[in-house]
Length: 462
Ligand code: HEC
Ligand code: HEC
Ligand code: HEC
Ligand code: HEC
Ligand code: HEC
Image 1: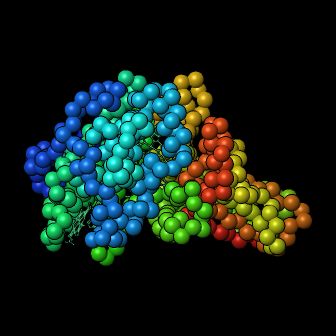
Image 2 (image 1 turned 180 degrees about the vertical axis):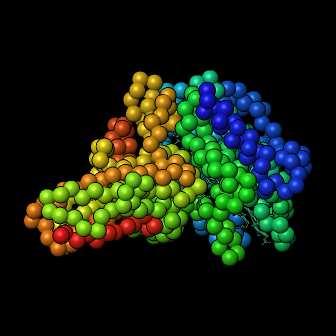
Image 3 (image 1 turned 30 degrees about the vertical axis):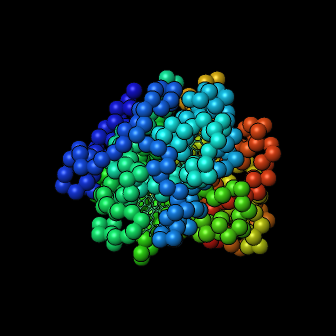
């Protein structure tokens, strides 16, 4: 497959060009750092593991000395990765279709400490409070901070191999690894500087997945498709998703999700929304012109106003990225008269939970995935094909809107547009009867507007 070669090439380029890995090559760096070994078969059964679940501390134990990181992480999707109803419903479906393999497929990224310590059949086990807490942490502090080496291979899966992830960790030895070059000592743990924490590939093992030759989540490959990102690594994942805030790196890992189980005005969601808005602020830019033409300054009645339009991606991966099949971004454009009555509108919806109008006049960025029999689905494990309509990295999309200006309009008209994005398509909640009891969550789906995408033009009726 062509795409495959391309991906491998890109991963190879990341490996060979990344300047973050000081002067030494990757293999030299890897030789320096110890890690504990585990092995599983292709059902995901642990055959052997040097890692015990209690090698990881509950994240709560870090809170007294690292209160900011702890509070931010508590608001992150990394913490909430197994604690939301969407995950639970979809994981149960995966288990129905693929037995234990389905279960373990999900937790290899969403609750990795559980998988590699072989403790997955948690439904049937009596566990201590500490163990329950560590499991409940999802992707906890110690999972990341016991990582010693990078895994530079993308996760490439098929029906036979649904669990195939490799993590290089050294937990339980009282050492925390991180990006702090000269950490002060403390009584609780040793600290070791490891340059991989400032490398985008630290995020690779979970933020990239090909399944049955379908590119399901490709954030890392998208990012790496811009040679500037790879060569200079000046826009690593951490720089946007873990911004430095004077004394620490923000651990909220804002993307686009809020906690759907809480109302939008809940203080936790308010903090996330503020952070998501600032992340989104300059993510795209738009113009009322394209390579063919520019918007006119005047128009006559009974004429059709042509609205040439361009939207350009200014961020470091696709929009949306990741689980792009659950997310959607679109252009809302309105033509209004002097009294703000609508003459024409595109991409408008009345409430946050309305479906978009997927007609050819609207610009909508998302992807659609299908299972074996061609049904649209909203979960990764059954993916057999994808229609990818996302706005690619560095891509500009051009469009021509048109709007008929009737006789009775006079004076001035206003054309305005903005790009909007929401983390979940409302369709997801109608995709399975299991969601019926959660339809109230639809009220908590936010819609964000991207600041730099807001444009306006006044046109005179002559
Ligand atoms: C062990 C696997 C793993 C690693 C390593 C990892 N992530 Fe994640 N990340 C996830 C999972 C799983 C989710 C989704 C959780 C959920 O919403 O259920 C996620 C969610 C996110 C989100 C939030 C998306 C949103 O809309 O809220 C961002 C941003 C993110 N990760 C960035 C990073 C960055 C940057 C790194 C590297 C420094 C990283 N991740 C490393 C597994 C991982
Ligand atoms: C008794 C206080 C204390 C506790 C508890 C504690 N730490 Fe630390 N940690 C520190 C101090 C002090 C530093 C050094 C900070 C500095 O130099 O700015 C540090 C540094 C770190 C670093 C940076 C290491 C580096 O070289 O970059 C990481 C990562 C870290 N801690 C993770 C954790 C995790 C995870 C936990 C919970 C399992 C935890 N810490 C619990 C006090 C503590
Ligand atoms: C998804 C992985 C991930 C998780 C989960 C995570 N960290 Fe980090 N942490 C990082 C990375 C990556 C850096 C380095 C960021 C950089 O330097 O750009 C970091 C940096 C740090 C540092 C160094 C000081 C700073 O803020 O830069 C400390 C201390 C720390 N983390 C503690 C914690 C604690 C405590 C938790 C849990 C509450 C936690 N981390 C959860 C990935 C993670
Ligand atoms: C230049 C800043 C920037 C960099 C660098 C960056 N991101 Fe993002 N990221 C964003 C913005 C803006 C969004 C929200 C808009 C969107 O959907 O892309 C986002 C969204 C996300 C999401 C949520 C899914 C989504 O589409 O909303 C994940 C997961 C994510 N990023 C992971 C990563 C990873 C992993 C890397 C490194 C390979 C990375 N990002 C690099 C700016 C950045
Ligand atoms: C390759 C690692 C990986 C595997 C395997 C995986 N996920 Fe995820 N998942 C992620 C990452 C990374 C994100 C965040 C991407 C983003 O924000 O767009 C995510 C996001 C999610 C989200 C929340 C974001 C949304 O779309 O609203 C849900 C729910 C989810 N996954 C469920 C599952 C289930 C259920 C399974 C098993 C059938 C699974 N995942 C398997 C890595 C994985």
